[in-house]
Length: 567
Ligand code: ADP
Ligand code: ZN
Image 1 (cartoon, protein in one colour):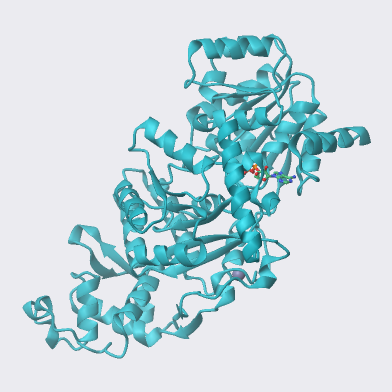
Image 2 (cartoon, rainbow, N blue to C red; image 1 turned 90 degrees about the horizontal axis):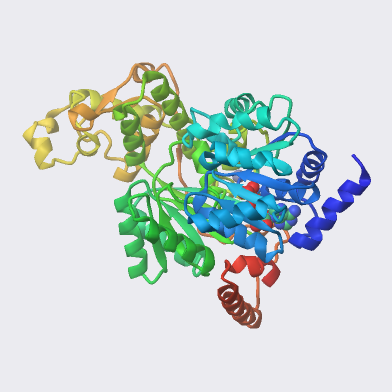
């Protein structure tokens, strides 16, 4: 690698993008691709993948072609680049014919540094013929995990992208993704014929994000409290499972004086686009969304990501939470999790039309996610372990900050399991807990369950405690729900040894939810924490000025500059 290439790369970084130094493996990746070789880059969301192809594209002769499935974001990306003086354009189905023709002409004349193309567009023979005639600096294949048939973002067109290698063997290719597991990585390498490419696996740690998983109680109130106490006036994303819950939650937040917008796939395209653009451009908007929202969203100052429902997998959870704190300042990943989540997710898998192998895989993904929720250890250690990275307890997650204690719950769980058994494995959680706690409800009396030997043997614990224990036994697969029997609880094979007293069962008990402010040690030297009254006022005025500038230039506020700069 020549020194001068590295110097030129740094020069571009500083003069075009305005950053003083490369981050992590960026420098090495830029070197490699700029000198004509292939790379496969795995970096967490917010890690800084874009520069890895944008800078080589500027250093090499010709135009860099970026394949991306995220049509809705191309306009913003191109605008942001234009603001920096980079000649960028896009081709996708959202633009009219004239606009596309203008872009094609600019490409042919060599007037473009970067061209974003949707995969289905790129693969047309018209588009490939056009590329035959121009100098191509590189191919960047963004969101490369879309090539994986097992993943949740599978796009069939991605598989055909191997044509790029066959047709332009001399053009370097760089594939990028935030999905890290080894299977996906191998699948990408194989399907895109990148076996010979150098792999870069960045650390998946996002130290500025504080992870917190709280026990679900009254979830909307909990969310409101969390936002009011920790994130008043901040931009954030709230994920919900269903469209209805998205709309209800957004409405609720607005009633409570928090500026919230809804986003889900059932809304019309124009409204969705409007909400997305308001979220990106305005300060302090909370986006309440299904997971349809967020892929490729590059908003650096998202201060929190909240989950009101359990994500289906750790991959999904990590991608979604990764949208917080991309500017490196402190951010929160907050989730409320409860018994109903376990029931609902298991049910969705059971009732899906997919084949056995797929269901099994979904199930093991869910188990891993539940493991994260129920761990008594450091959340970050657990997360990073999942991505094959070992680490030390972080001091910046809920379990590190207020460790839950584990206790021997064998006897309690035996009481619970026996009660489920005694009521004939034909009743749901409410009824089982009533019997256990000696509540002679109408239903209990109707079935004469007050005469059972287990009636009232669990009076010493609160309903919330029993729910938490039931949830954990379900997460561990001792109890399952029979959806055909209206949610009746049933014992599994795994319950036997516990009932017979052959295994000791340790469960965790939450401490009071985390309330104290962040530990300063974990926060590092970030200037975020304390602005004095005057400084805060000045900050607000600058923020206001930035919003005006953003409006005048019609770009997101952070393109003018980041919060970090502002401070
Ligand atoms: P990814 O695509 O990996 O999710 P991005 O490429 O969008 O991440 O980068 C995330 C954020 O980090 C962006 O706001 C970007 O401007 C910023 N960033 C990337 N590289 C650097 C760097 N070397 N120095 C400072 N900021 C950077
Ligand atoms: Zn921790």
